[in-house]
Image (cartoon, rainbow, N blue to C red):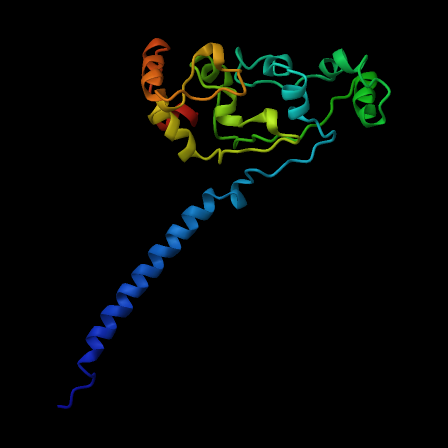
Amino acid sequence: MAQTFHPSANGIARIMLFGVIALVAASGYLVYQTSKSPYVTRAFEARQQPIQFSHERHVAGNGLDCRYCHTSAESAAVAGIPPTKTCMNCHSQIHSSSAYLEPVRSSYANDVSIEWVKVHDLPDFVYFDHSIHVNKGVGCTTCHGRVDQMPLMWTVKSLQMEWCLDCHRAPEKYLRPRAAVFKVDYEPPADQLALGGQLVKDYQVKRLTSCSTCHR
């Protein structure tokens, strides 16, 4: 009986098989990398707000501490959005007649909250507590980036589970002394791992990686 396929067909079939496997693997890798990219996570994308509040101006320019506006960051699960009264503490005297700030004055006069757009918006199925992170030595800029350099607010991290787990598995890479938690220009020392390792012990930080830690 005559041979149906040329002997070279075996080699061609192997090449095609390996090619298909390589294509599937490359496609999976591309999807994985795309899911972490700013295109998907919207990192570095400035959010438009009802009033274009500048952290750069208020933090770097005026020297405001994070806690002046985010009053519950050290004691509650949510850091808190400041009421308009907080804005008016200054702006009743500074730029008090500026047309740009009319929405602030109107909000205060009519007792109607400004509808700020949430920038760091975790899914509803994720439980996150600001206070425990702050009190364990996680700095504001570790998650939020250099807000003192943001004329408009944007995210710098993916906020995905992989990013959270990186810190939960190796907190010594990120912890800083509690006195420096709100220091926006803090720079990790050359011996960060040694410092972080000591802080893990001092602050009794646990490496919590179970699902129920964040998904309750």
